[in-house]
Image (cartoon, rainbow, N blue to C red; front, side, top):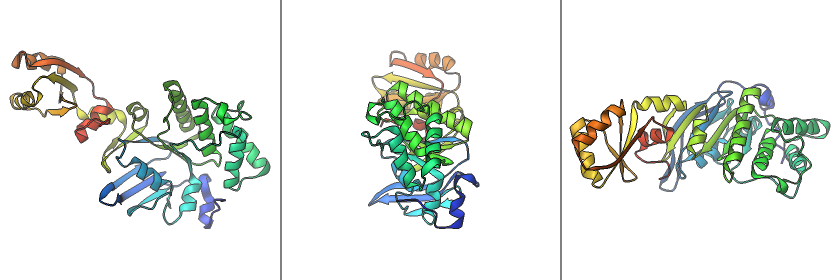
Length: 323
């Protein structure tokens, strides 16, 4: 299938991106009685990396499928550089390159053969396609591996080949679903370096889903999804600073009783997460001795540190991402 434009405006493609890269407005979807997305709204600006962070089942995959035109929403709208994904899906697809969570390369073909077949889907042929293949392989650092069979590449190199495939038609927006799935730490860093290079050198907008906190921390902004709802969005540093103070974690034999008494004694909110007590407090190093002295012998262990994105998730949901 060739993704030909059916509207003269659709032919503008990546050469004329307008307004927000992605605009999600009051998006809703459900599967039977389960609400997968509930009134989700956010915007992705051109030239930034935005990560949609959340646990499995939190709504990330449903959002990904709707944005990439694979699924129709129950209600709400999604626009990609102004093109509605429901009423103008061909125009939206022209603007985006997609990297799926599951590998989408034919491992029996070479890298170049995979890219040539991808180009044919977009109506590319001849010298123009050959030039684009050389260009995109250079951009992802695979210009010397084009003749290699995909199955002979490492996981990190295969992921780079997936990026090349998604970038072949020169989209303004790159969308990735769990880009680090199945990769070792070194390969994950490699993929992230390439995403940041694409943003910095080419102005490519990146929208990705992830359940990994360190990937979220590498984004320009993070949207946190929990049970289908957008509970927070902002730059990672802004989100962590908004919590305020330090995060204190307490291990105790009778956590429930101690939680109530700490809250009553110091007027703080105490949560129980993974069987341990958690609270936020300014100048924790001064507060901890006071807390231990107030409840002698009841605290088995206590730690504190600056807030992380994991703490942001707990702050807004009362749960750890792994739960």
